[in-house]
Image (cartoon, rainbow, N blue to C red; front, side, top):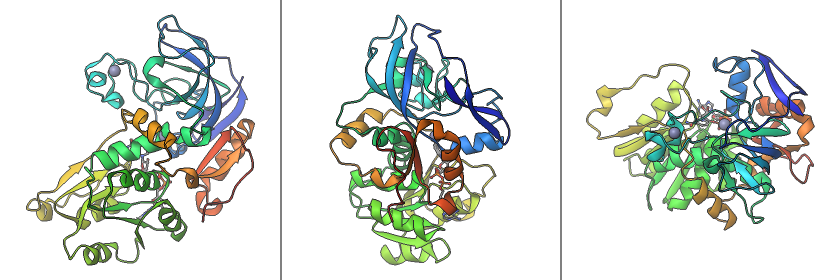
Length: 355
Ligand SMILES: NC(=O)c1ccc[n+]([C@@H]2O[C@H](COP(=O)([O-])OP(=O)(O)OC[C@H]3O[C@@H](n4cnc5c(N)ncnc54)[C@H](O)[C@@H]3O)[C@@H](O)[C@H]2O)c1
Ligand SMILES: [Zn+2]
Ligand SMILES: [Zn+2]
């Protein structure tokens, strides 16, 4: 088969690789029909994730067809169309038993395209298939479903659920990339009074409005002031960080109201300063998290019911064997306007950004 192989920092190739085989009775082999690329893959290629060693097939998001299953697999059969989750839960350890699949201690968790070969290939071996695969109905398009492998549950669980978004809340989301936009879409499920999106780039704010943000502001244009003006000087009920920089985390802690919640989604590479000299008296709750994907079945039902607008997140489509071109477009998002690029599935025409 062909696969996108990490060859060491700065280098990948789309090349021949051995077909995967069932190794464990809980495995399934899936043929990838619709695949996408994550910002995390770009971090891996840069060399930021040292556990990923040369020779590893990348990717942790896909939709495909089950080809073969191990003897213990019960919930899927060959021929089923499935979503492959970015997290593979063992289902048995202390964390999995508490729905905290991301922290799995039983050999699962985030393993695909990280510790074992991933989804950017014609075929992939998926461990713990009963919990890692979600059967799909024909009501869900492959390009929508593939967004539920990682970004939708991440936005919902680490942003909206951890931030405890409630009806009537003012929610400010800093960062309007794929994760920030998915946070706008899933926060709306909780009927906040208003959602304010903050970004550096005007094009991303346009996308945020298309996704349902009520107000948008450039980070250079005093977002703190806008939030204060819209909330009688109080601040936002919930501030969600979807960038991963010290300054955007700090901005969230300055925009939240007394008693409010700051939910951090961003992956941080540098330490941030926590201003406890201001925050200690404000009753603020700060949460962090890695996605667990416990919410994927719920989000799939809501997507099938047309309750989550997803289409504007996919800006470019390619054939599977155009993997290197797709990486090029995705990695130059500022020039290309790329949000999510989807490979395979139908139709295959390149489409322009939603704005
Ligand atoms: N916690 C988890 O489980 C998890 C899972 C997936 C992704 N993530 C992280 O979520 C974050 C967002 O992911 P993404 O794919 O949307 O990333 P992205 O890089 O595509 O988007 C980030 C957005 O932030 C904006 N931005 C940059 N600097 C800014 C600033 N100073 N002020 C305001 N906006 C600014 C950019 O213009 C961009 O639109 C990343 O850090 C990613 O690693 C976390
Ligand atoms: Zn990802
Ligand atoms: Zn586990």
